[in-house]
Length: 100
Image 1 (cartoon, rainbow, N blue to C red):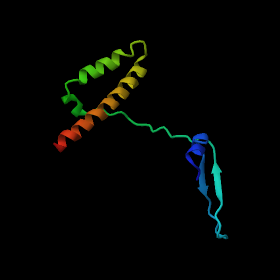
Image 2 (cartoon, rainbow, N blue to C red):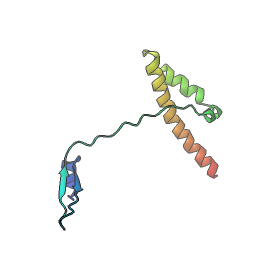
Image 3 (cartoon, rainbow, N blue to C red):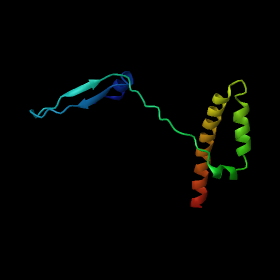
Image 4 (tube, rainbow, N blue to C red):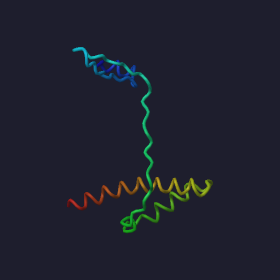
């Protein structure tokens, strides 16, 4: 309920229909609290099929060299994140090649 302008003014608002078992009218609750998103923890997994890609070494080297001033754990974490994103892009290519 509400128009576009109202949603722009109150982006966190949501309306909830409450159950009223003893009435034929349902209550509506307006919740304007900030929406929080759960951070999904994932465990990085290196995919063996990535080794078939010619640029895997370059991707790893660039990501590793991009964090020279960091300790080992932040470098590993950053490299894993970059590989994860790169891997998703590569996976899309696998699917497209499979279709053709």
